[in-house]
Length: 244
Image (tube, rainbow, N blue to C red; front, side):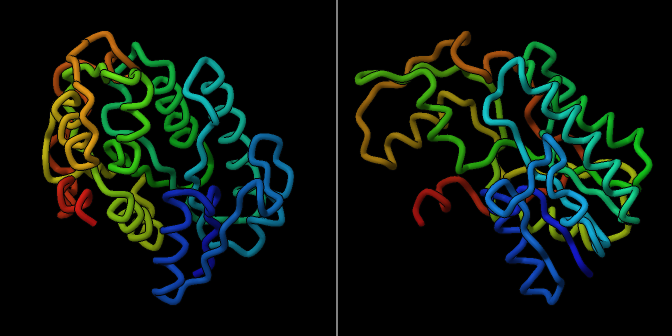
């Protein structure tokens, strides 16, 4: 199969391309660095020519009020281009619990992206993932200083990027789900606990202070970011990943 991977040079996309190529598929990475601008549509017809499947793992540069417009415009462009090129399957990567965190503009934007895909003309699959292990250090940096890191006790079930990429690759070569597959890591943590585990593994002696108003994940409550029944649970644990 020929599979166009939009965002194919990033954290997840590059892994998806590698996995698919290893399996014998023609997986082609596309991004701004290869001449594709999904926001304007520049380079999209060329990227989709001859493609059986398009995988979209792009994201905006910021998680703020600009994100709804980004997902609306990029998805409109992608679906228009995919229909014109005769692409038979469109796959996007979204977030577990996106519809349960209305207080986050970015999560609302991801739901908008999903809704546009569902209403579009191309058979689709949505892979919803929990937060990536690789993103935890960035989360800690949002609300930290030289002495402390402030984090809410928000529950989450993080997952390794390699496991996310395998799930996206598997879905992309299958029959369109016309629905959603949830994937998550094997363990549930409170984010402040996850911060303490991370800092200890890094030899960082800063204190983690529980602050339920700190950072983007303060907008999530209860088990919103925890996978529900029916989710695919990956094997890699956070401590295993930290020890690599």
